[in-house]
Structures are given as structure tokens and as C-alpha cells.
Length: 441
Ligand SMILES: [Zn+2]
Ligand SMILES: [Zn+2]
Image 1 (cartoon, rainbow, N blue to C red):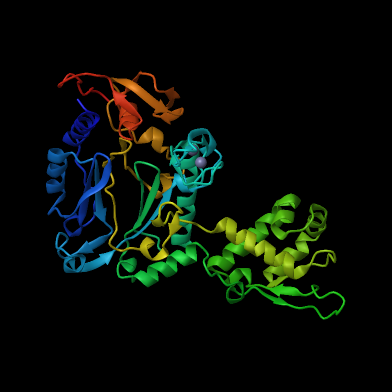
Image 2 (cartoon, rainbow, N blue to C red; image 1 turned 90 degrees about the horizontal axis):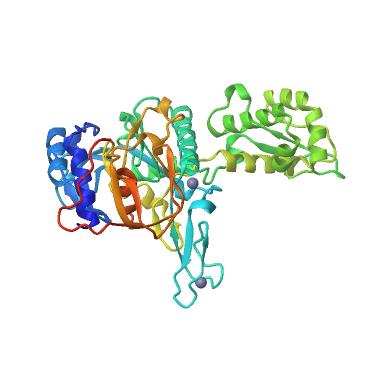
């Protein structure tokens, strides 16, 4: 039996015992499904109810099922315009593979595409370090990089709640593979145009953020010999909101922490100068409360220092959701397609066919302690024999497996799915229907 038949058997087993009721206004959504190795093989499907969707899942056991962030009057109509859109949720995605984490060196690898070169190495590289050709990257995830995707998601949620005032209607789910999806379903976002969605995205990513319009402006000093002796006006803490409030709070936090090395790096000054600034922190903070960024230490250039601090703080605090790529080789991002209101995303509570993991919903206040590689196992744990497996050491369900360098292995079904689905393993040569789908989770 081939891997596809075996994996589909596991999926069918899963859907036969589940009832999935995770799609609000299910009858107004467009659905798409995917096959083994193909994330979308059909779109423009629709279901009248969750019951109809569940019987479809039981019958077809698709490798992937996604639904539209938009609600439509006629969700299965074609072309897109004929569906008549009624509104669309906001959806943000964070994928672990996009985030620069140290763990990539231990679980990712690249291989040069040029046959005459053949170089390869550890980590994530888009170009061959030997000949400069494009490289193929073998990506894996681990608790560390998924943890970073989670931190980014939490930061985004704080922007949604504090800066956009969207307190209700936020739902989070693990994508079932590399990251998290944040859905905003509240009424006030439904009618937002594409350009309004782009504006929100630019706000989150601090694209084109203008300090002057936030209220941070430099007032030059009068002394000719020391042109940088002026000060900055800043918004008063009590009335500040949005980015201005975040920047002021971070200034305060760094000064309060007394961390001279951090302050030095932030302001582009020597640590010894940062220490002098920290000595007058009470004055600096009390000025700040009154709408002034000023200090008396002469050796620090006022304008350059505060500007450098602001740029550094913004770079640290902004969120960068995973954006749609227009060119996979250069990973070029198209902001316009990233706010596509016709996009479809994984149905929460279903299995991601590349991993066998559950795309599980997580409560916003439970996200911090959520461990997807432990909590999203949904397939049986009975043993499956693999003829060969190639994988770095990977973590799943509370333990590590591998590394495997092409040898045979016996793994629990959920781990076998994880490797088989990505083509990193082959089943032991059992003919016909000899491989029994293992039971018991
Ligand atoms: Zn090369
Ligand atoms: Zn990792």
C-alpha cells in the first residue's frame, strides 16, 4: 500500500469519530480541499450546515480543508464576483519558518539547486554559499521557533485589542503545521476594504510610521557651537495612544531597568555615556511625563540619540505577520495580495495533511501556555514500520525522534504520518491491505 492510501486511512479514522463545528456562518463560506501533496485541489465548495461538512469529511477524508475568511451570499458561485461578498474576517498568519531563530541551524538544511555544484549545509539559506545559485531549504519546526510564532501572535493580539480597540471576536488557532492564525470576526471589520486592510497592516508593521506626526519632534538648541543641544517634544504620557504610547512605555521601561548596555545599543552611544544618562533618569522620566525628551549630559548628541532610540524601539515592537510571497525564490512579498479578502485558511479542528497535526483552536488567554507539538496530536500512537526515514532530530508528543539517515524505523502512527506526509520516509514493503491502521490514541 502506498503512503497516500495509508495516510488517508488515518484521516478517515479521525473524521469518523469527530464532529467539527468550528466555522461561524458555515453556510456562507467557500471551502477548498487538498490532496496528498497538493494543498488546494478544488475550491468553490460550500456546505449548508456543519452536519453536511462533517459527512463530506467522513466520506472524502481530504488531506486539507480550508474555508474563506469572507462570507458570501452564494459561496459556490463562480467567478468570485458572482459569490456576492457580505463581509470578510481579518486574518493574520505567523509562520515559524519566517522568523529568525537559532534553532534553524539545528533542524533546517539547504541544498544547492545547481547539479554541478551540489553544495549543502545546515540552517536556512536561500542562496548557495559556494556558487550563489538558488538553494532548496528543508524546513522543520520545533518548540523554540513555534514559541517565537506564538510570541508574535500575542504581540499582534495586543495591537488588535489596545490600538484597534477590537476586544471581542478574536480567535486563534494553530495552523496544524508551522504557525498560528489569528482571526478577527467582529462586526466592525467585516466591511473593511482592501485598502483599509492594507492600512491596518502598515500600522502593525510600522510601514511609513512618521515620528513627527506621532508628536516626536526635535527642537534645535540655541548654542551655535553645539547644535545638538536641543530637545525633543513628545506626547504626554497621560494622553498618548497607539504607537506613541508604546514608544514612551518602552523608553520608561529601559530607563527604569537601568540597563546601560541596552540603552547604549538603542541610542547608538557608548555604554559609559549611557551610564551617565541613567544617573539622571529621574529627571529624564519626569521631563517625559511633561512632554519633553531631554537630558543635560553634554557628550550625548540629543537629536541622534533619541532618533536612534525611536528607530530601535519601533523595530523591536512592530509585528510582521507572514505575508504572501509573489516570488518564492526571492521571497518577495506583495502587500496587496497579503490582504486578499478572498483567501481561504485551514478549518479549525481539522487535520493538516502535511503533518497529521490538528489545526486546533486556542483560547486567547490560553495561548501563552499552549504547546502545539504536545497538544495537537490527533492520530493513533500504535506502531508503524517505516522502510526508511530521513529527518533531523524532531520533537512530537512529548519526546524526540531521530535523527534518521535513511535507515528503517518503527514509529507511532502520528510520527510516521509526520514523516510520510512530507516525503521524508517510506512505508515498509507490505503489499495489498497488509498495513493495518493502528488503533488507540
Ligand atoms: Zn551551489
Ligand atoms: Zn525551531
